[in-house]
Image 1: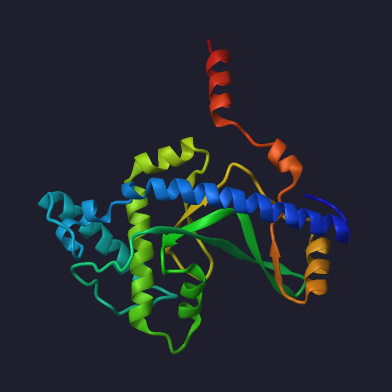
Image 2: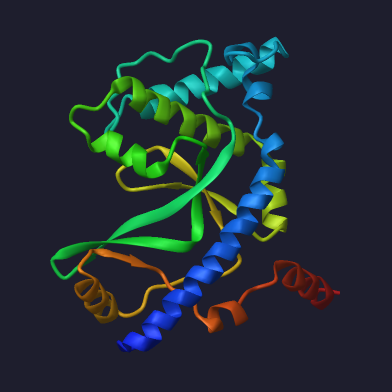
Length: 247
């Protein structure tokens, strides 16, 4: 998206972006709530999860061993540096998926701008907001117990999504694909990110710089234009065309 600064045009584009983002997020949240039963920590961990019934001993042992290795590698490293042993059984306070804003830092002319994506979201559990997670990590007087709970809940969610190929295929078919990404400030912790079928982008740096100077704060949101909507790709259409062309 390349354009000069036009305050009125930027205001209209921001308003349009917010409306599109709200509609897309609502749709993604609805799909996620409907498919939440496929995020199955009880099934994967069995008796290793507090309150869960016993299941196949060999299978749950395998999943718990893999999860422990994941926790030992990521939890002990920066920025978490946890000395907490993995508690058995795992105690999950909430297993209802929630969408949180995907944010990242953009270095810009000697300052850093915090950018929000209106078309992509991080999946977490309710009550484990991503912004709160950031604050806990940065707090020198943080509670290690709280930090441990955040790490465990996001790792469990990642592990469940990574082991549920059917969930990923369903969301892809609904045009809200899931990817696993690492975010700055969170070390090697992998996050589940849901993307929408519409792409958003940033305008020229001069626009961002001027807009943040006018607003007085170092935050900006990627923008969605009408052309972005018209440029949406239909994966099923593309696959069918490729199938026909191959005959």
